[in-house]
Amino acid sequence: MKLNDIRDNEGARKGRMRVGRGIGSGKGKTAARGQKGQKSRSGVAIKGFEGGQMPLHMRLPKRGFNNPFGKDYAEVNIGMVQKWIDAKKLDGKKDVTEDALRESGLVRGGKDGVRLLGKGEIKAKVKFVVTGATKGAIAAVEKAGGSVEVTAPTNAEVKAAKAEAAK
Image (cartoon, rainbow, N blue to C red; front, side, top):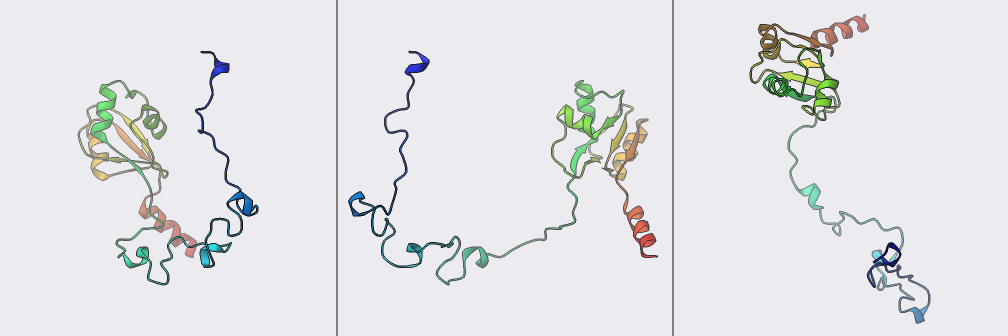
C-alpha cells in the first residue's frame, strides 16, 4: 500500500442534501419541514421553549450565590511545596514565585494569582512571593526560617485606599 492508494471508505463522505429544489429531487415543496407551524418557518429559535409551559430550567430551584467580585486563586499547601522541594521539582534556594510554582506543575489555574495555605509542614528555608497567604502559612514558613512576601493588597490597605479616595 502506498500513500496515493489511501482513500476514504465508500460512503464516508456524503454531500449535504439540497432541499427546496423542485419536486423531482424528492425534497422539494416543503423541503422536509412538513406542513405549516412555527418550525416550518424561517427565523425560529425554540431551544428551551415548551409551548408556553414554564420551561424546565426556570422550574428548578436555584441555590447559592455567585460573587461577581470574588477572586479566583490557585491554592497551594506548604506541605506540597516541601514535597516538591524534596523531589527536586522546585528549587528551594531561589525565591518560590508564582511562575516557578506553575512551571514545576504544582499549581494550575487561578487567574487572580496563587494563595499559600498552611496545611502540612515545611522544613526548608524558603522565600515565597505570592498573591496571598493565610496567617497559619506565614507563621509556619517564618518558623522554618523562611519568609512570605504577599503582593496583593490586604483588606486593610484596600479600605484605606477607598477612604483616601472618598476624601
